[in-house]
Length: 241
Image (spheres, one colour):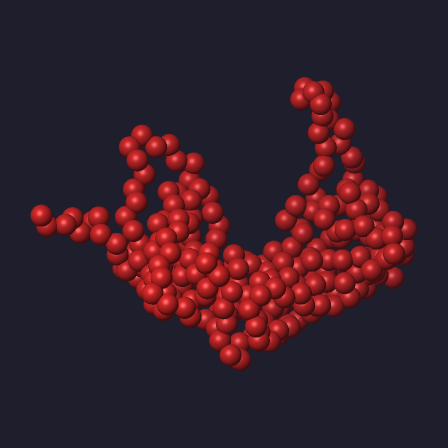
């Protein structure tokens, strides 16, 4: 019997964009503590959803990675509403910070139909304290990459008026570098209080308002999966205020 070509594994590059295949390779290799340098081949295995399946997003991609040591590894990725770079035809690094959920209102009620006990916003920062505060602004910062694993890179220090964080943002100089791979394609800009009684900057309401300025340090967190010798990761337009 002649095999149905549609049911045979296909080279990743015949199905997806070159950059997406690189991202898929990184995810598949990381599953077994390897990196793209260990991979000799990536194929996409046909894996259609069963009849009658109700999807809440995309059906997972079935990937088979072959490694230099002769082993293979099958993994499914990009199911549901995943935002991983491996799930995009045009992958890019994603800059993240606490601002993604910083102003979420932490309120709720039991039972569910009772009035919610929600906090109200704090007063605006005092004008004289704003004048005393020191926002952090960094035009660009190049970080040498010399190992795989977790990085915590100090970006700079400053102070916030009345302890209220209004912005914590940055951008990547290269949206999809070819000499370094980050886990999940992300880096996170964390803001840490330098005051002895300082609370985490994870939520506006839970952190609270304080008199005067609150000193802080900004730290960039990311996890390197793979890199080429001499690689660096450059961020720009850093603002914490």
